[in-house]
Length: 156
Image (cartoon, rainbow, N blue to C red):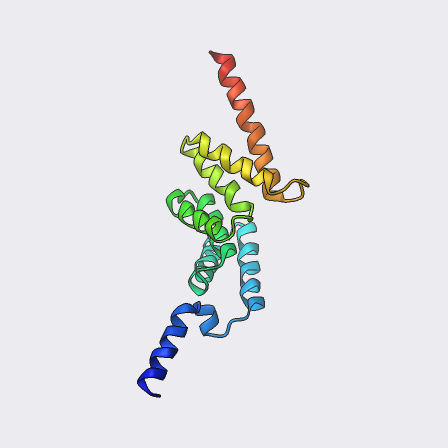
């Protein structure tokens, strides 16, 4: 291989994700994500974390991988890490609903109500037919926030 060929090969590999470099298909990548989701749902969070972190390493441009890892970090209380991945997921795919809802939950915990409300509003806007589970969770959060505000106003 000549120097020019080696340079061209390196340039190409720098633009490809590790998943692409090793020939991992989208179907295989998605199947790994589904396994991680099953672990997450079953409460096997360390196994899910290993898979989701691996998926982000394999393809850092995957909004779904960042969203899944952000959700996991939200669930285990690693809020700074959660925000890093939720923000990245939103940057990569602003139409994905779940990262907005998870980010809103972190913002509520941090007392950043304006940001939380903005994220809840965005999640609901993205689901006008009320079919997405994450958007429905956002709707429930909005009701809970409204009730908390009313209760706080009633105590004053």
